[in-house]
Each structure stands twice: as structure tokens, then as C-alpha cells.
Length: 337
Ligand code: PMV
Image (tube, rainbow, N blue to C red):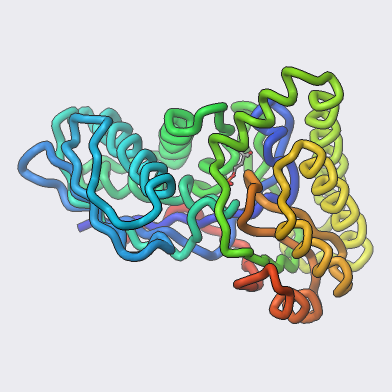
């Protein structure tokens, strides 16, 4: 039975604006979703998710219907969104393997909290498509895997999706995404600290909210462009730092300042929350070089840059923070066993 794992990610810069063609720099981090798949003799799809940071749940749905209604005792919105990604991933796997009637047993085990800005849906989509196609005897090149995972997200997220999360999860490392131009970056080692408020945002709704704001107000469109400018400046700083070695203090200071600016622009677009802001300020006051929300916002995670233990300690005692960890860059994307 093939198992594929794929990493989550944090955004150093550029979430939301990337949906409108601005560049973004996400970095894969060592928190993974693992999906094990066995092909079935019929066309049914059975999903067992022991840990999507929900209580364990098992979903059975008929592979041919998109409107299956699993009986579950966990929050409906999160489950609908999780099963939506799995359903679309199954459709992509069937298409890639040219097996429209294939049925599967999928077992999902994820270390990435759902809807928290760490790319859980992208990691599950990448790992599920990869393991399901391999269960049918087809191994996809990483580029195709990333593209099919992107189509999965685009089908589920009302308001649109970018290729950033899915490309980053399939490829690993620090990446740069601008429209359909996706590439790996040679980046220095960065000391990421992640704080999690225990909450979740609905990526589709948040993207739709920014889209509406951008269509209504020229200054919101300018804010999106300004995020792109932050990313372009950040890329220059990354390019000047020696790849693979720890970033020096002056590089961290400039990158941190740009992260702070990016967070301010994301707040202006309405995607931050009181608890995300509180964690950002706890990190800054502890001496972090910079801090920002990561991902869609609406609750979930922040990311800060700090080589010392001070930010971790401050976040551990911050009332809004339920989990804090140092995030290692995941240099490998999808891993197959
Ligand atoms: O919160 P996440 O991990 O789903 O990240 C969403 C990132 C957005 O830029 C808001 C949307 C996208 O598809 O790029």
C-alpha cells in the first residue's frame, strides 16, 4: 500500500496578493500530512482521518457523487472542507491514471492543524493524489502533481486559489510563485517560530472577502500591489544572503521589517484577528525581528523570526496562543514509501 507524505508551509511573504498575480514566497516546514491508499474492487471511496486535529472521523462516500452527506459529530464546516479537498483529489487521481471508476480506501494522518494557515489542505491534496495514483500503478512527476493539487484547491476554494501552497508542498524548500511561474529559491536558513491560537479560518471565504474589497476600492487594490512590492524587496534580500547557511542578524532585521509591513497590509485587507494581532505583538515585544500572520488569516497561526528562545517563551505565556513551535524548513516535498 503506497503512503505519501507532504509538508505544510508558512508564508514568509505574499499570501492573498498571490491570488491576483503578485509574487509570494512560501517555505515548506516539517509538519506533514501522510496519506495511505489502497485501491478497491468497486468505485467507492472510503476516507479515514485519524487526526486532522479533529476528533477521529471516518467518512464513506460514493465516489461518483459530489454531494455526499457523511454522518459525523465534528464541526460541519471543517469536515465539509476537508472532505471536499479529498473528493477533488480523488477526481484528479482518477483522471491522471485514466481510471474514472477507480475506488479507494484512504487513510489520512496529519500533523498540520486544519485551516490554520499552515497549508493543511495543500499537503493533504498533494499526498492524496500522489498515493492514489501510485495505488493505480502511476507515479506522477512533481510538476504534474503540484498542478493537479492546485486544481483541487481551485475547485474547492470559492474566490480562487494560487499555486503557492500546492507547489511548495509538492516540491519542498523555499519557493517563489508568481502566477503559473513556480520555482525553488536558494534561501538562507531562517529561524521560524510559529504560534497557533487554536482557531481556524475558512480560506475560501477569506479569499472571497479580499476579492470583494479589491473590486470595491482602488486603495484595496493598491494594498494588494503593495504586498507584491514587499515581496519583491524581500526576494532581493534573500538573493543577497548565502544560501543554506544561517541568515545573519542584518538580513533577519530587514526581512523581519518587511514581515511586519506585510502583516500591516494584510490587517488592512481585513484578514487578521485580535488573537493573531496579539500573538504578533507578543513576538515583537519579545524581540523577534518581525512577525506576521501566515496563510489566509481569520485565526490560526503567526510566524516570527527569532534565533533566541525569547519569542517561543513569550508566546508560550501569551493568553491567545495554544501551541508554539520552531518550524524547520522541509527541504523535501512529497516523500514516497
Ligand atoms: O491558509 P492557507 O494555508 O490555506 O493559505 C491560503 C493562502 C492564500 O494566498 C490566501 C490563498 C491561496 O490559494 O494562495
